[in-house]
Structures are given as structure tokens and as C-alpha cells.
Image (cartoon, rainbow, N blue to C red; front, side):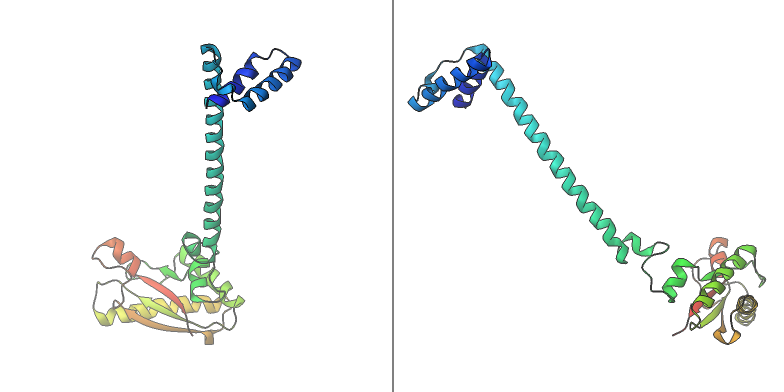
Amino acid sequence: MQLYLGWYAVLLEAKSEEGLKKKRVAFSKAVFQGAVIRRPISPEVNLRGIKMLKKIVCLMATLVLVSACETTGSGAGEGANGGVDGSGMNGGRMGGAAKAGTQEDLVLNVGDRIFFDFDRSDLKAEARSTLDRQAAWLKKYATVNVVIEGHCDERGTREYNLALGERRAMSVKNYLVADGVSSSRVKIVSYGKERPAVLGSNEASWAQNRRGVTVVTP
């Protein structure tokens, strides 16, 4: 430490470039002879040298922190990109890594279900919009066949809901066929109230259970 302060004393005491050269030669000789270690340093020069060392240490610490942040940011970016392969958040987004023409593709990129009002089997505007997308998807993947499931909420008898579920499934099929999908590619089945999507005896649950679901068959 004292050797470093001795060098700073030489720098601070030099008044010109020529003077710095002379001081450097003298300092080198002093180091060789071991004299610089014993050289007394004035309090003013000592204080200025210490302040300069502190500045250098702070600068080096800042550079280390910046470098560490850049490394961490790069790793985070790779993690985000890696999620596109189906893991993490990106695996479940629209336009994700689902294989084309599969049930997952239908669910993620088109929508696999529509919903009905209580005790009704007619299609609402939102349902028709979803079925238009399904029809376009089925025409794109002409070898894919589907089954339309008709579902109901828990109210009413088992027999009544089986019949209502069948009417709902048939409404979906008829719309897809009218939109250009071959009737032979679309089957229907009714599950009535036997397979609720959401458990609960309230309107929010019932609204999710009154549905028609398009399922890709193997």
C-alpha cells in the first residue's frame, strides 16, 4: 500500500511532463534501493492518494456489477425463448407449439367449445363466430374427424338433459355442415348433465356446463 502511495505522491508532485520523467526515474531508483518504502509522505499527498484509490476501487466495483447484470439479463432472455418449445408460459399461448391438426391445436388456436342459454339449443352470435373458425380449421385439415359433445347443467331430469344435449350437439353439427364441412366427418354424442366441466350449484357453474364441445377423434 505504501509503495502505491509513493507512486501517487510522485504523480501528484510532478508539475510537467519533463518533471514527471525525472520523478519516474528517481522513483524507480528509490524502489530498487528500497528507499520508497521509507519515504515520508506529506499528509496532503497521502489524503489525495487515498481518495484516488477509493475512486479506482469504486469504479472497478461498478464495472463488475454491470458485467454481472448483463450476464443475468442474457440468461433470462434465453429462458424466455426456451419457453416457446412448449414449456412454461409460452407453451400455452395462442399460436404456441401445438402440433397442427390436433386437439391441442384446436383448443389453443381456434376454440373447442361454445355455450348455450338455459334450456336452449339455438346458437348465439359468439357461438357462431367460434364455429366459423372451427369450420375453416376442419377444411384446412381435411383428414381430421370430430365428435360434437352436447352437455347440460345439473337442473332437470337425466332423460330430459340427454335429449337437450343431443339437440345442442346437432345444432353444432348442422352449422359446421352448412359451413362446408362434410357430414361424414362430424359425429354427435350427448352426455346430458353427467359430465360437468365445473362443479357447483350456481349460475356461474351452470353457464360453463351448458356447452357443445368439438373433440378430434383418433
